[in-house]
Length: 88
Image 1 (cartoon, rainbow, N blue to C red):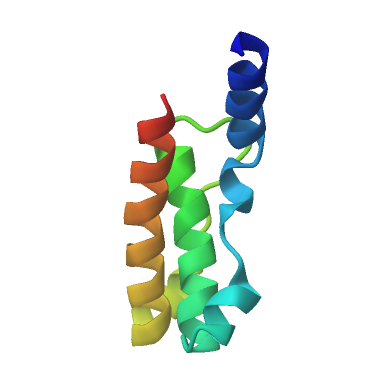
Image 2: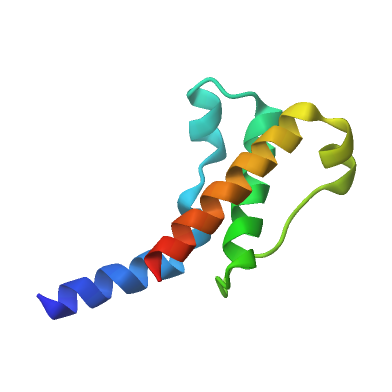
């Protein structure tokens, strides 16, 4: 049982930034701009709390000029921080 738990923790740790699916967000009805922002923000959020495999990504021009990208980025950042911090 302990080995299974450790394996699950390792898998979730490595897959941390892969937890966002752009196509899945679009299929759920979100705009491509929102989905792009969400994916970037999620990675940035995980990175901000120490995930070693995630990068801080933000398209500054889009963030400043595209409301949908900005909203997606902010939502993704918040969820990414929470998801990764909750694991540890």
